[in-house]
Image (cartoon, rainbow, N blue to C red; front, side):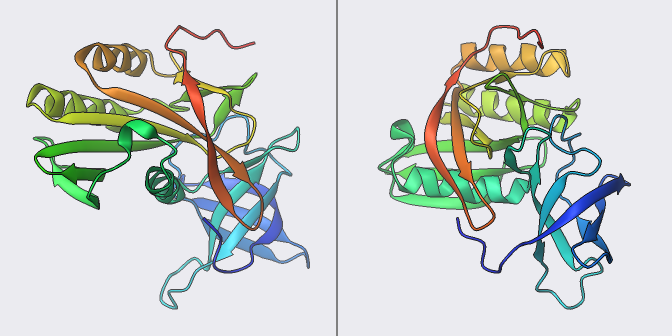
Length: 239
């Protein structure tokens, strides 16, 4: 996934009302950007961090910039745009990077499903087979281990229940954790952040929900899924 327009770098100053990012541009001007990432962005977003912003194309949009990448205190670039995760997983599936999800005739996006007014990120179909694929962006990585969520996620738990329902109804269902950062090697639940999510994730796996992890190469020009991450469901104790 290449960025259609050059990103600009800025210095992060503060975050307000979850969706507003304030930063200082190279010329000293204040820039206000939108972020669609509702998590805490623990371990990557910090005062004085270098961030990269993309320009908005909608002339009527209030905020003219979108937060795309954050640099950690140790210099690791992290993609934090959650919409990008859906595109990255779609590209990875098309490229055969996730073998269990390859070879389907059709890929549809944002399809209504379930009993909880949800939309599935990706629906794969061939003949009579369906695979309902939910995508989660992972920005929290410690010691090479990516963890989700980085804030309590009632929405994430709802999606797990929807996937379990799909399996109970005879379809396949999959959850893909997409870590837009180059230092992730394994993936698993953040029990210390949301113990209920971790418990439900393990129940979902036992019920037949497939779970996959994707790692990405990240720079200011492009982000690309380039490897599978090992799933580790064991409770993780932060270092």
